[in-house]
Length: 557
Image (cartoon, rainbow, N blue to C red; front, top):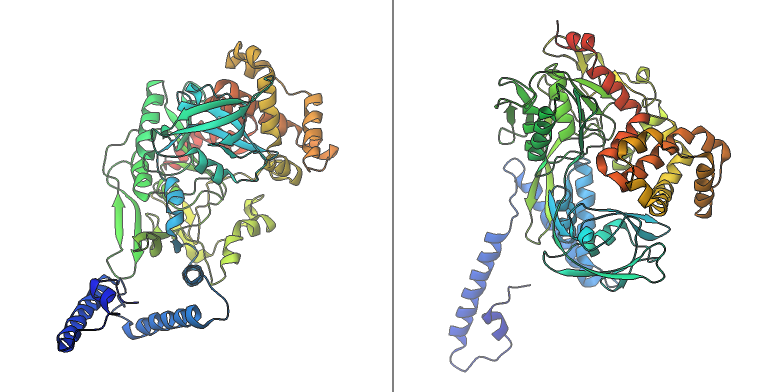
């Protein structure tokens, strides 16, 4: 359709006698100018290597979509069809080139931001009811009197309890422009009627450092959940604080970290790597997307025992950090083989407000290992790779993992490492089979342990807050009767009762429930402190970071 210009709006009117030639020339001139604007703003630029085929494909798709829109028997959503076609096309390229529609940009971008505008509530869904786990300390929800265990019945007048909304939909209702207000209707235990509170939204920190504390007088623990815009600054502050407290050795936890901004990850790695050694390099089509990143600053912790925890959920930028530290023999890597996402995406803003994230290169570790695991044309097969690892026994035994000899590489001090996808740890730790058993997984998916813990906290709030965390941690224990009560409550919500399964994972359940109670009563660090007792991977990491023999072997001494 031609652009909407004054000339086009006038075309339906008859021209005055004697002026038809002048009018036609004017219209043609304006149309030519309009077409020039369209061509100039059209982002279609066929590659110099294959311009004819690219142009033919472009015109073919445009022609078919026009016929469908004009002549198909039923009404169609042409924009939806175009989105679907684009997504299917990108899946044919690789698993990580994606198109993000304009409507989804805010949600996808929020993951990598270090703050947002909202009310500051951590919540859980249980029995289709939004339940407050904890209000952010000092945030607007806490200042308005919101408490752990409060059930949210409505947000801004919209009923949310029993409405079958997702956590993302609930989060969007809570968020909004800074300074605006949102009304919450809350149900609180022991109160006869719901509470109504109005909360003014404000800036809410969205930290990517989940926990940072001293395990013992010398050993620090820092968990990085993703590489967001503020991750490097948050990490620097946390590390400096732990060093002031006496840290001389560190466990860096990158388990479940899906990646994020590469530059934040390489700056974090630079804190551990001395001199000007290479951290990562990329290789793309031609030279324009090739790059090499080196250490360039005097880091905060370039010497001292260092262990990095990884698992099958560690991906992309997290793998870049682990690979660089392993190649330079700077850290012992503990856990399981990482995900294997080593494709570099460039974000390209589109004219409709959407975004194309197009793979333009591959990541390689300093010694030349490709991080990306193999992939074919079948996206479903690629996405089920971790499940296949479990089926083949790779998550339970290192002997199930086989590498081709031609993918063998040597670290700075001559240790053998392998490429071909993901980072294989130096110390393998099998996945906790109880934590991934069907019954335990169903309990966690239904939120039963957390709901039980919140209810317990509400019923014993005063006595819990009268205890110091150290007293609580040393003396508190979930009883057999409480475990039975948890199983009975879960059974009411569709988790089939299994006395044998409860017995098998009793220790894990007790630990998880105790950790949730500690989270409500004492905060985030106590939560991780309690979990440490049953965290097999962290226990191995703590052993490795304190093993002077292993550290000396790593350094080639």
